[in-house]
Length: 409
Image (cartoon, rainbow, N blue to C red; front, top):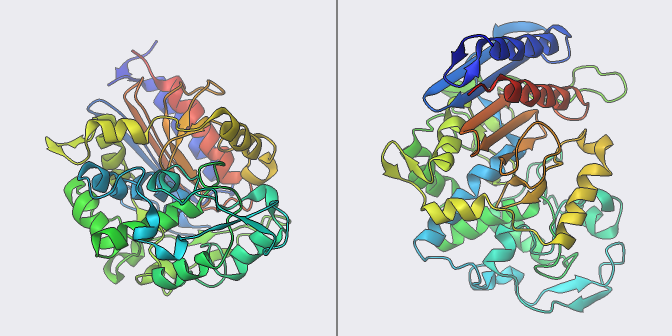
């Protein structure tokens, strides 16, 4: 069986390293940093280089653009406010976000923007936290008037121009009808950015400063934020979006003078964070420890349970499953877990090597972060190869396949 290393077999860890090395040696993944932990044992691999043409090696403290793996972390700000009774799940958001009062809802998802009915009820905090407030990035509805308008208004982060500052962003969002009635359908992404605007309005301070004060600083996440200070910029690799036709490495974001080199106009809870494997480990370990970090309570136990429990109805699950299973050419097979909690996936059926109850998410920049209560496991794998091609998605799949084989009890 081979000697175990705090719940991991040496042979299993060796296979993980070999498989990650194979991806780097293929020339498709310049470099990767991976972390697995169980109990007191933490194991880190840093392989390859920051640039596709060589240069500085990947290191344990390399800073990565976390993309959508920002979602499970940024949602913690709202959980703090729930714990303190400064927000309630069924509060109407319009008291802080008047831009979202009196909503109109499209009669049909692909209809003209003025063909609407009144919303049956106002939007609640619960709708925002569960990603069911009525608007989202719907990959199955690309080319419809509403999705075209979301892009034209600059409401999403992956456009050539960065998103506008929060008050202008929410003003523009408020000019659009909803795609679905509040609470009806699960929809991806926009709710996570909206959450940051809500938190800032409730607290009267910028979203980032509240996150630092209540989550990042107490957890010692000193390299996590919405930009990389000048003194650390040499630890940030380029972000590649390889050409889907040729596979050529195209730089989507340069470190120096890039999007993350200065504080953004919009601190995006949906995809704006930068971080390191150790910072993310501290956060997900806190969730596994029911909200406690080194004896200090960050979130209440029930808040953590609520975030990491599937919140979806069977109808909503069917839509989420179709998005994952019927669009594998877009998602490269990511996201087939079944459920969704607050800001993160929650595995509700065994579809691969991971058990039911595992929670976390993946990012389009080639990042993946999950915790697994059954095994007391945290796994994090970070690249900077965007999912314009399937290479980082395949590496992420292989990472998890090897992580779960390496568990020995």
